[in-house]
Length: 231
Image (tube, rainbow, N blue to C red; front, top):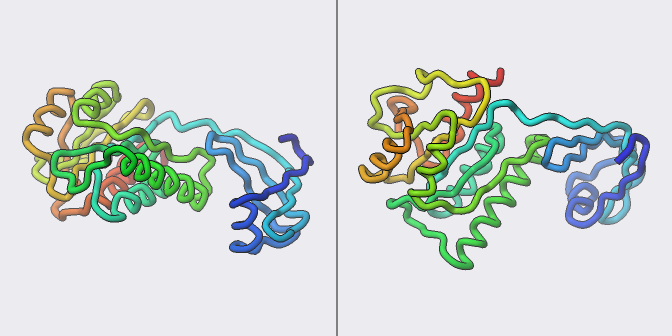
């Protein structure tokens, strides 16, 4: 897109803008591609199911020097999607589903594919709602051994567990690289999983004296890390 070019917003996005948000002529709208590009547009016409826009300017926002990844244990019901929504709003760069030993649900076959699709849809919609130019990525479902490999590759790996002696707020956070946080299921991690992650070089940390649900722990932990590293 070049400045002053015309764009037609149709399909589901056009319907949402015209019928749900009810944008009006002259209103300013930002278009993003999820990979850093943001176009500032003005609404020139609204029709049934589509919106015509004039692109007044475009910019590209570079990714943050610090990449925050949360390995999220699978949760029952809609708690996993709620976790993705919250973490996206906070600013997490990637969420990785993890089939933990104590996860009540297990994603397999078509059921697993549908679940990943829902997480990706949630991340996309939440990214747009939060006006992010970079959308939160949703990785494939990992087994414990695969999580250990990600822990080894990260610049800082932290496993959140209630019985840790140290708190997350006490761990120094790098200004760049990748920080990986592991959030266990409602029943917490098993001793075997903790041993595997310890061997991979991860640090154990607590979020404090209260017990958080798996659907909120990742967002809280990411907020602690991001508030100390980016602002």
